[in-house]
Image 1 (cartoon, rainbow, N blue to C red):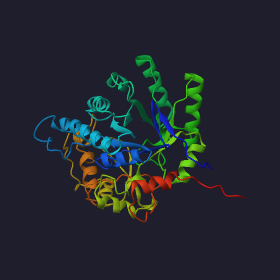
Image 2: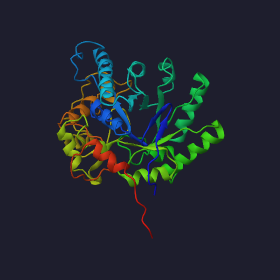
Image 3: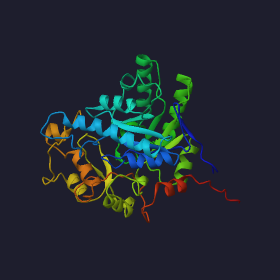
Image 4: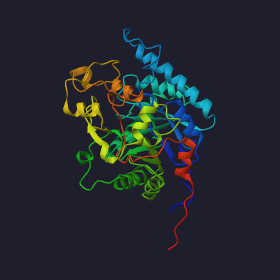
Amino acid sequence: MTHVLPPLRIGKHIARYPIVQGAMAVRVAGAKLAGAVANAGGVGVIASLGLGLYSPDFDQRKRGSFFTANKLALIDELAKARSISPDGVIGVNILVATKDFPVLAQTAAAEGADLIITGAGLPLNLPEYTADYPDVALVPSVSNVEAAQFICQVWQKRYNRLPDAFIVENCQKVGGHFSQCEQINPPGFSIASVIAQLREYFANQLGVSIPLIVTGGIWDRGDIEAMLAIAADGVQIGTRFITTEECDADRRYKEFHLQACAADIVTVPSPVGKPSRALRNAFAENAIAGASSIERRCIANCLESCLCRDSGKTYCLLQALARAGQGDVENGLIFSGANVRYTERIMSIAELMAELTQPQTAIAL
């Protein structure tokens, strides 16, 4: 077992520990959480989805005001996070599937984000949006080898560059939306095999080494060690950071997670057309059943493709996540990783990071 965790280098930025905080929308992972994690030596991440939802700049009656509010809110959150952690590594997570992806990517780069992490799609044009800010590291999230290869090929051809790192999703355990790995991988899928295939591709086809950061099911120091042992460079942890004082969500949301265990995990349909992993509550049960009582009103027109807006199916994702994050834990969607465990209390980021990073003592046999 490793005695001291190694640092994590992503582009020109070095975090003291190989821990990237997960991006939980809407306003679950904001400036307070990201700043605290960065201060403690990890990579703090602001989730951009829905940042402007409760802003006075958002008026549902005005076309496009949501996107203006999002941009202004991101500028504000980045400034707050940087004031908390002047020297830490701070990133922004942006979903490719949102209509304001290009604007948010440009804004994050211009306002001092150290890295941009993408999800919910392939960010084939991302280098174009950040071309004026070469120090900003670009980190796509992928769930299989083919997606990573395609991004590398396109970026090399169009922009003569490669990603600075990849977030590699363990589809068997990751929280929120996930790809059904049995459809895109051969039988016997394992995250170790994905890491090994990517390492071989980088070395033999590209002649480079690109950092790989595993997300999905990372809960404690043992899980971190297990990922490092299969040649991952770091981990991304989401659910565990929810039950902290600095998490930006309502305390009722945190307390709901405190009592959760693996038996509470359910698979919920989503308006993005993918399954999602969440905690069981009244909303999740109604969504699974397709209950007519679920509101199907789009509130912000935020996604490029949305079953709620386009077909009147499922529910408004933004509203469902926002309700939960604001404390309505029965009538909102509560994303969670599959490895959730009962937690005794809400603790500070400093305490949690110490628990995750303190040197381990090898047991003599």
